[in-house]
Length: 355
Image 1 (cartoon, rainbow, N blue to C red):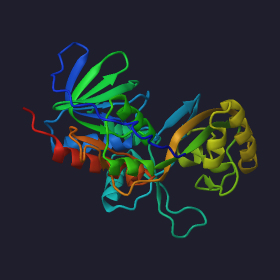
Image 2 (cartoon, rainbow, N blue to C red):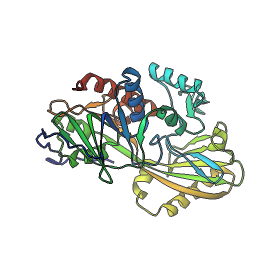
Image 3 (cartoon, helix red, strand yellow):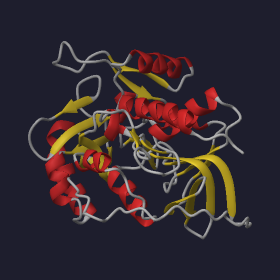
Image 4 (tube, rainbow, N blue to C red):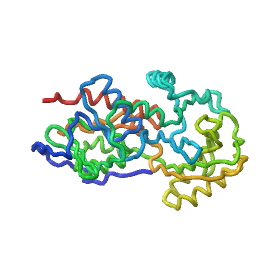
């Protein structure tokens, strides 16, 4: 899924040098972070650990934390239906995963992928992948189920407008949403980026994913450790949440391939879910008793930026503005964390002193 920035679509208004009037619906903070997924949470935690005096507000339109670190319950079954695991390549991130293990919110799922002698160990969140996000969120100021309708610059910071009419004034802004959504926000406030940054964003592409969460009448026949990667056809991945330790009863997650998801993303979800269930049955050795379907429109970046974050205020007169997420540091859980840390460092270097 590729998108284009139309010429003139993201422009910059002259910076407004008028102070924002203080109203009951308006709040002030040092930094606003849009997105309470792993990049946003990691950025907030890193900033807080290095400067306890700064106030940070995270805003997310979702009802839950973690973005694609997503878990769901269907009656007595529990599912990881977004990111399925973590791998570690970066030494600093490996140390962070060990801290999560020590805190009881992560564990090793398996050492290598079946049939691959040199693959990386897979780690999972506990009790679901969302457990990591909930752990990071402790002590943070987070507004969930809150949609950001617009962002715009004022002389010494940013105004983030929320649905319902609320506003947050901040000295710095970090945006971690998928790039197409970020561009929509920037366009809402007529915010321009440098030509170089626009070209970098144009090169980013995403893959969609349709996920099916299904309960079974008995344990599946999927071999230990409960993961099956399929290289051809509509299904790309099946995981056994019971074997994984996520669900107490037999329950599987099916991820459709990128091509199939793109072709059928806007089709009737239950019909698509039934198709995928039928295709998965030969691998299961069990009957499906119930299922739900979820669509991840921006499931995974398949063409990423080469930098861990973007200094979007670069070569402009904008206040500190950083873009982050796994589209910058790599399409993995690790990439989201590394991007969040890079955004935190960049913001701390550029945040003006509070007068």
